[in-house]
Image 1 (cartoon, protein in one colour):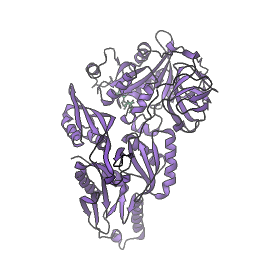
Image 2: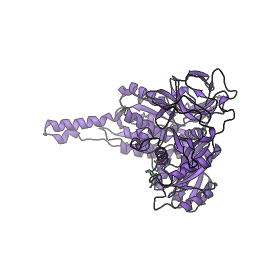
Image 3: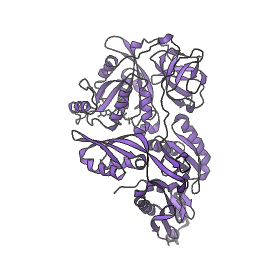
Image 4: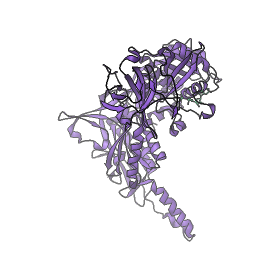
Length: 610
Ligand SMILES: Nc1nc2c(ncn2[C@@H]2O[C@H](COP(=O)(O)OP(=O)(O)OP(=O)(O)O)[C@@H](O)[C@H]2O)c(=O)[nH]1
């Protein structure tokens, strides 16, 4: 780690702590890179594209998962040098809680809007979070290099839709660098400096903003000092967990890690303290000095609750231990991902995993397959149901396979969301139909120019499968979507089982609304008929509720011997064909006498609405 002999007492009025809020792809990371580059945080040659996005997957998918922070030194037009702390926030709905936690560590935000696209669903969601955190805002219109950019129109739209003054919006192109100096000036001139009531003489009070696992340094904790001073060697106490630690390192990210002696009021930096797991650090906790504690803890955050669950099983049972260790490693860096062992009659040993949303699920699954070279079967994603039992007790259901006997259940409650959808009005009809088909209740429909803004209440259960994919395809990618979980409501829900050759495949069972069960069951059977290859015998595929079969398809029997066409041919050709079949088998799973390909599990769940 580099060492910087910073003078550690940057006066408060020379500090600006800010975030960038934006819809996905509106250019947040590109702008962050520009700010780092133009303040000399990294030499040009060190700039790999998008330094803020650490992980390969993030880079490939172009999304920011883990919030990061960067300290910049900026010499302003008034001749003074300011310390600017940029806290990066993720843009996707699944990570909304990370947005909120990082916003609470700063006083202002840059609201970045693509001047060719305008306000989108996540622009709204994120800007309201910033306003809720009492942030001052600087509006930045990006991509003005594009011929399609219409800064005047978008400025009006921002005023109309969000209700903030955008007359002094800064026009930039993060791509070409145009307007970047104006952004830096606006940060200094228009965003407030942090305040500290007690100042640096007060007992230590710092906010635990984030934590992550670094292979070399172990658990790193991102902190924002409110009052007092955080120093190397100090013994601190986490007020929420009551755990004591001795601070080993104090540093800042420039974005390289740079050690400093201490952090004072208003400053943001990281500490390390031989903390074993990220799970030992509670985001939103208050860090204070053990021997001179602060009187009152900060309000803190609600911990992120997993909302979507699914089972992950190794295709090859021998990979179970590898899967366990890989999950343990991922969990080190992502306390919002949870897993516990599960066994399934059909799939053997695996894990029941909890995620913040579907994207989170996909990212974890992809990382397990790619970084750890594991072949996995994922079961149908399920939301968390609340079961009210006839004996008066209450329990949570994370897995349709654990569904108790229906006669013992008085009521099943399912989570509902409030969704905001923005779309060009050409696609409105299709989107209304989609929401309606998914049991949606329309709350509001307003227009902003030729764009419609829709508010719908929807059961989360109807959204977890493929709602987002469908929305994108109906709107040719133009609609944007954001949601918040609102409450649990009673639903007429049943467990639908799928039987292949008479055997229930628990990985495919799911909770469905009674009215939609037959249609869903029929679609599942039809899809599986396409996905499961023919065998030497007839295979019935059935969907059932309790003992009642509600849909049925049959896969006809295969007669031909595949090697027959090699008759008389040379042995190597025959061997090749058999090898090819064997490789194909690796991605198959045996259920009784039937082999089901791995893709069938996911594909069967992604049903069209046509
Ligand atoms: N033409 C043009 N393209 C830009 C500009 N700024 C960003 N882009 C492009 O827009 C795309 C999205 O930019 P990002 O910076 O990755 O967007 P982001 O908001 O950080 O996206 P997430 O990390 O997914 O939240 C990239 O392909 C950029 O190259 C700009 O000023 N002009």
